[in-house]
Length: 151
Image (tube, rainbow, N blue to C red):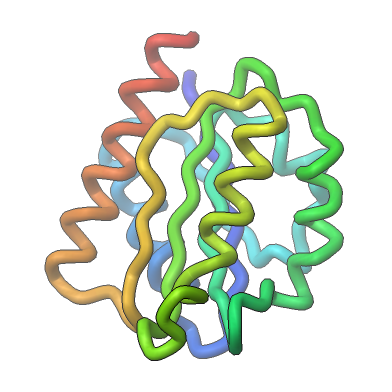
């Protein structure tokens, strides 16, 4: 059976909601899902699933969540060949070119790890709205479709 680990970093609750929506959509697709907060997640445990998802915020001018820095460092040195990944997150378009930079950083680190992109990254402005719920459901469906090809 295909499994997924979804971690989130949130300051306002928006990215926990993003993670919840991804988890709900994965569960509807028949995936066994584990959801945890990034600072409470051991990277070694995270990488045991078939599908790996990070939902994290960006603050200020492109800064990563401090609580996720150790996790990110572990990701940068990991070999995730054979895993499927996806990255989603909310940010504030007010920051222009820095909007959701953390999503880009995690996406690049996953790609460098040898994991296979299962879905295009999803960037949400502030909190998820109705159209974002649909985008996240499609994101989850794409992850599952890619993972099933590898299993």
